[in-house]
Image (cartoon, rainbow, N blue to C red; front, side, top):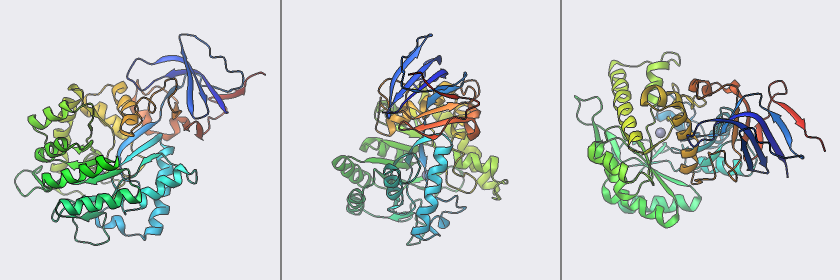
Length: 422
Ligand SMILES: [Zn+2]
């Protein structure tokens, strides 16, 4: 069994506790031992990596990305490529995510029914590099709901009534998805307010999706912006709530009451990217869109700060996969958590690691540096707790390990590899 011993590392263990100087031993695909306070791990057969003070932290999880959205500028353009070409391009994004320190992704929906599944299975078979992946369905929406773009080969599927949702979920379970993605929200019909938002799905439809999910042991993730949509989701047992923009007091109370079983991902990459990077990526932003993005950031920032204060798990995952919000920028979410939501850097890291392991369904075994956990580890040049922004720079990752194997091996000049004496 391969053994790797990291020495002289600043361990950020993912749980939010203070970092410490120590050693970490990996055997096979698990963390076999963690030492601190000058303690030494005896591992005479291990390859020794001298971190020389670099930080060692768990690999990050993105809770809302679309690997098969190829940085399209429009929703219509998501399915422009043939299914075959789309899969090949998606594979590149899977590698890119790993290159940027994300060893897990909870998909926010797939461009076509089989794309996420094919990529996940190829990654698990060792055929292509990529993060651990929870494969999602296409967005399941209703007539006139968000994502109903009047096109047959679209990134959304339009369903109406509980039976159609039930059938679609059963088919999705049969082909092997992990997550049913639904869209209870619709664009608002009240023109005066830039954040106006309607609720489009019915309680019976959401209940039908959650019923199949329970029977088949799948996750449900929902694009829920209106207060009613959030409440409908929490009431029926949706585990992952995206946006939660307009959650009112009652919805916030409901989220808090379910804090041990629900996750929230604000998915602010799109509005933030539009304001900050729109021009850079050649996207024009109308005054309306600018006002909406600014209002969205303001509203969501306050809401996420409140949810964190109430103990609700809020996770990074910013809808990456669009022209002005491309794949690879994902760690910008951690920066936004600190800058906008009032998270400490340690809390932001915890959201992306320990809570990431929990949303991946591997609580206590993924996203933490502890004995027995899976060895998904990042060796970082510098201290993310001192400057969370460094996680956005892939060159800072001296080494990237997933499931005990190096995706990126440490360079000899910064982290010396020595084979311990026999
Ligand atoms: Zn999304």
